[in-house]
Image (cartoon, rainbow, N blue to C red):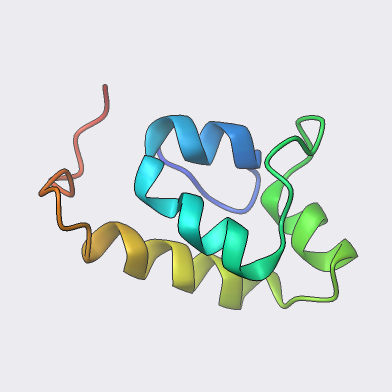
Length: 72
């Protein structure tokens, strides 16, 4: 599954557990009721594209080596 701005935070965490720290750092609630990342970021006063970039960096820098782009 390709995660993007339309993906919910719980789905991001399921697909890419290494993003949990980014959500915690930004104060984005993982129990957002299935709302999109874009919506939740906007409601928190954050620029959705900036949040997306941080998440992608977290995936690229994943120390566990699970950043091969394959999905489970």
